[in-house]
Amino acid sequence: MKTKAHFAANLCLRTNTNEGGPVEAYYSGEFVDFVIVKSEDDAKEYADDIIVVWPTDNTERVLFNFNEYITSENVDLTAYALQNPITIDDVAEKWEQINQFIEGLSQSTRAYLLAPWNAPF
Image (cartoon, rainbow, N blue to C red; front, side, top):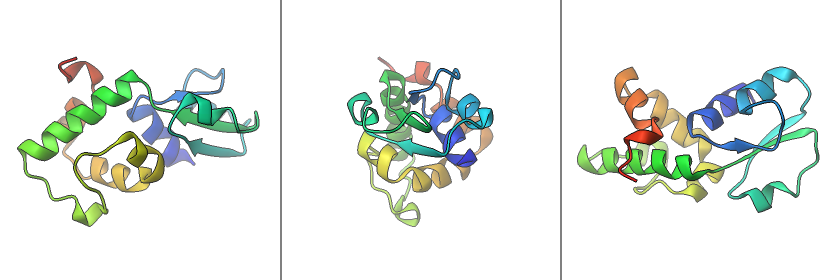
C-alpha cells in the first residue's frame, strides 16, 4: 500500500480523503485499503475507510511527458507489459508496471517527467 500511495502522489492523483494527499492518507493509518480508479465517479463506490485516488488534469500532463519521452527515446516497454501511449486506463489497471518503469529511470529524467508543468498545455 505504501508503494501505491507514492505512485499516486507522483502521478498527481486526487484522493477522497481529507488528509491532504495519498501519502498523508496512507501514513494516517485510518484506512484499510488503497484503490486507484479511472474517475472521480468511480471513487464514489467505495467505503470511507478506503483510500481512493483518481487522475487529474496534472495526471494527463505527466502522462503526456512520459509518452513524449517514450517516443523520442524509442523506449521499449515490453519488459513492463506496457504499450505506448500509456493511458489513464493503464494508470488504474497497470500501476505496478508503470511504477517499475518510473523507478528504472534516472533521477533527473524521473523528476523532469513527473513535473506536470513541463507539458506544453
